[in-house]
Image (cartoon, rainbow, N blue to C red; front, side, top):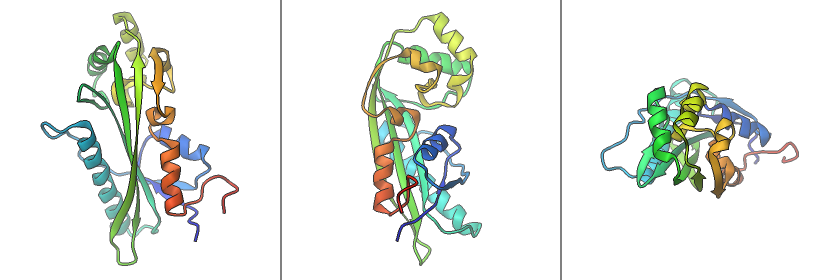
Length: 205
């Protein structure tokens, strides 16, 4: 049986745009979790833990609030360089420091995604996938960083830049999925949809 709708457990407008591009029927489910890092935790371990926490939070919210039972998509994106995690900047000064560190580097953007579902016995289960993209950033001047941060574009983006916005001017090249850097890798997401028979594209019944 094909499933026609799902929850997107994310506040990201970019993820909403990508699901709209895929013609997915969804509604936003807002969740909040603690995203602080654990000491000596590497980027992949951090990402796996956060994604699993989001699955639990979304599933429990559906059950606790007696919402309609349907699959739910969660995702988290991190930028990493030399095993250091660059999440969303918390202040403009933080964004400037972050961009100075990433300036002139080749770094990695990883998105972990999971598609959760609730069984008839009310158990929360999920399938997951991930995508890695290598990004080569040009060397940035102090003036470029200050001007960019003043636009406030960096403030809700992992690594402090948006490849789909003004930050595209900093990117010399990428190796891997562009949409992964935006926040939701399309091929890997559709692979999960296929596994649970979730409809996407208007002509997929």
